[in-house]
Image 1 (cartoon, one colour):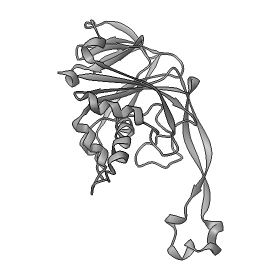
Image 2 (cartoon, helix red, strand yellow):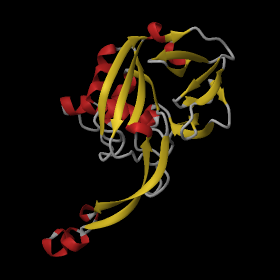
Image 3 (cartoon, rainbow, N blue to C red):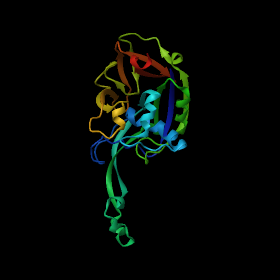
Image 4 (cartoon, rainbow, N blue to C red):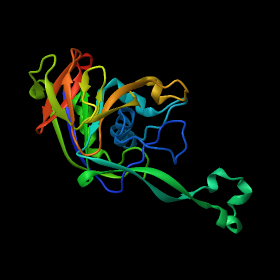
Length: 248
């Protein structure tokens, strides 16, 4: 098993919407696992011109390689911004003519997340180190406007970064973590539901699979203790808790 730790610069903030909600609805503070999988799958699909399959996203292919994905940051602020939106493609074809160009655009209020020092960290686990090299090609997170630049990628064998930790080990982390493997102090963390790495979440369905995570509150790391189903790794002096089930 291998890990890829990716450091990203985020230029204009990210907007990762909750499924089946208005695009002006609140956004996820950090990219969910499904979004992270799409981010690393995109450079592969672009290189080999892989198209989405009927009934779902071609990114689901990466579920065969990536077993876990998580994100973290030093701090975040959730705000809203106003965007100009091209809407002609959603109108009747007779309005695609030049004489109707005043109707081609509108404005929309978007939820947006901005990160302290414009830094975002992601971590991927895979049995195939060659797949992790596509992390160098990550150019966006979520929407196409969510542009990012890869500052560094660190790929290591899992046994190089595993920390000797037992049940009830205390630690601090900047990364969201499944609530099944840790308990975190309420003053430093909040529970949210996000979509996990599951095939159903890359298909056209209304039955999405979610998991409950602890996520840091704003600008402080979460203070947590490890449960029996969790393992702990350390990369660049940052601690990340991962489920034992994904590394067996």
